[in-house]
Length: 178
Image (cartoon, rainbow, N blue to C red; front, side):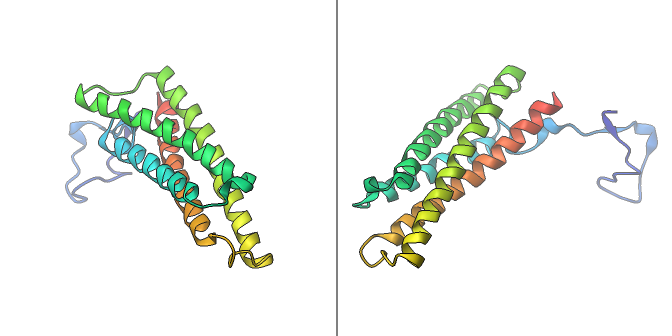
């Protein structure tokens, strides 16, 4: 059933419900953050900005190339940056020509790409945070290294992952409702 009954799910004035108008249709295509919307563009811009910040903060450290987790963060965030930047351009194009991105093949590509980049981003952020905690709490290397820089880079990676997670869930929701 594609309709919501106004008695079960009241919208607007709760006292004046007129059943003669017919059922209220609620679609999932109108949620903010979907591909081809302003909200979707904002999520993608946030993703690639946080990914770029994580890369820049990590790369400006002197010793990041000596540790695999830090190199992995740079690689994963580079992929995240490219993916999100490409989809931000696609969202901008869709907004400019006033067309939606609701093709099921395109949405399935977005879902798989978002899941892959989200998994890589979370793994990179967790590994960087874990190594940084190891250096700070257990080995006491932070006096010799730039631990705060690495912690900030991991935080930017987590924020990028949070936004890609939101995008992937919204896109999956739209794709599943097609």
